[in-house]
Length: 281
Image (cartoon, rainbow, N blue to C red; front, top):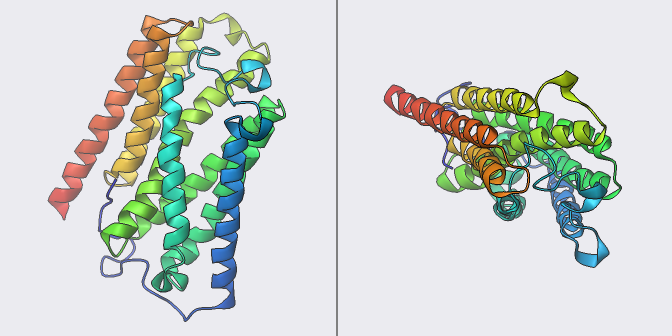
């Protein structure tokens, strides 16, 4: 999950060097991130069915279950949330370190991270409320926020390995997984809404979406100069879509093959971009 150590803005500036001294807005930002993380975790606890909530796979009439659409990953895929939430917890602690309070990099990222945490909680609540169309709007907003975070991470560099793992690694995993999740979410919304695909076979639509997901993975690899974290979670999700289509109730060998190929394309593109970046450095 380590990232490139070369900044695209200024190679001599790690990007998180302290700017002006600590300000009141820095403390507000740190508190906002912390409160947002707590709300996000509370939402996730509800989302897995604790405290009487309905598990996400069973909410909204099972619209997001592993066999709801051709683009739904198998249930084990969602274990990645444990890693992402652990990383977000580590990020929340990391941003409280004295050196991070007035960090230029944290000032650029903190508010966006807080927004992503709140949107995460909002997505869970929208699904629990049974509103799949609303959940699509929320996850689309989440994807936009994570894309902005990725752009800002790619333009700067962490000053040590801890920042590379906790900040870039965690947020990269977050982005890659949401790229997969939004595909499944949109497919669920269309299916539950009665969309017939204009008469085309669902496998054709699945193939088109998987091709788009692979293209996004290649784009992230090139823009991020081979950052591993987004590719890891994106390939993980695509691989579990393949598994779901050969082991679940909604079987489709064609979709499974296309999902596996998409995952391989993302991995190959990322490794290639990473090697090219190492050679340039």
